[in-house]
Image (cartoon, helix red, strand yellow):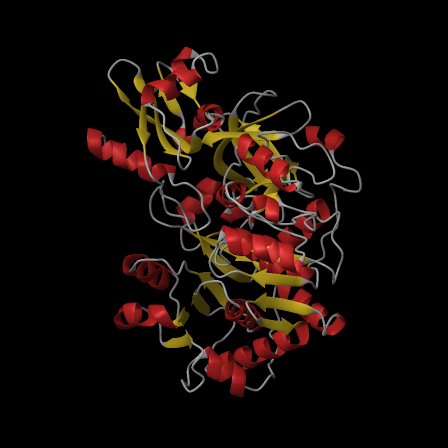
Length: 533
């Protein structure tokens, strides 16, 4: 375990993680910190005592309506105080939460509800009319509506105003009972439902705290959440972590760089997890120097690789420090991070967090360990690794082998134990027999003074098999040409890695957390060239 020699001070890699759940943590927060502010949204705020009362009212209604341990409750809600209440009410009743993106199409929602045999849905009122006729075609038999109209009997507003805050606590088996079914993005095929147990989720919060929580204080933190809570990253690093710290989460339903800066400035935010597109938006804000961001002590970037140039600009403009982290839905999600109190290597995802093992193995046999600095598939073992995929035994067997999670990401480890992601296994560009990893090309182009965003993909070539094509979004007011971008790469990349095409776009396809959908662009090109792969 090469990383142990580089482990940051005050952090121990091998730790004892108690066999607990976030339900246990929730009750602990209510008992010890009842008057602490737990949630803020706009001009609303709830103490932990008020938060607990709301959770118990909704959980009581669930139990009255016959919801039992193991039943699936789907959430299709934007970020809100009610989302957090619904999440914890479901956990307390022993139900399994099925996370849904409120931007889903009818087809996507239909698939996930039926795939998981979900019988209960909590949905935002604006989405109700769009999906109302769909329920009869699914397994759903109970719908709760998130609306402020307290006269609607099945609304959260009515229940939270008139309900009884008394609930029968359900006995949970932390390592066996599934707390959340978190669907993968589905960008490369049918979405897979990742089964995360109660222990998976608690473990990852505990691990994350032991590694990244060096400067945190219980009851003292103010975390600004701009991440979708239905996404595993926001769920763990924002929502569950603040309950773990008995501290405050400030919720923004929809990201805006101006709103974000004003809240950090006015509320003295101490923690600000984000994504590359969020930090990029902060960098480009015209009034960035008018805001005081010095209250932030921990700033974690996840969900997608953070370009080195974006990170440098953010740190120069704000004075804050950003640590790159890595994770995936199958690992609850965090597995690696740069340390907040140690060396932060540019372009690296850092080292495995406590109780997490990793190896880089051959892409040919999936077993032989690669030499240092040699790319291979990143595999992971730890208490945060999923139980498996919902009703997909073959997919589970392929992903989990001898206790190791095969991530599908290509990485290498350096002499100090730091890991570097170079590509998704399916995204490698093979040109003339040479492997080209998109990120190494993108890092070069991100340094171009006119470039805001860039994606590199492989496109068919009669002689080489594939060559590199770039999709580029320019900074506002900037202009450049395809020839100039390609010329900029000369001397910075080997000849076989040089892009041969550049397509300029106003924006790029992204997921809800701002991760660029490379596969969407690949699929577009395949359709153009009529390539089946």
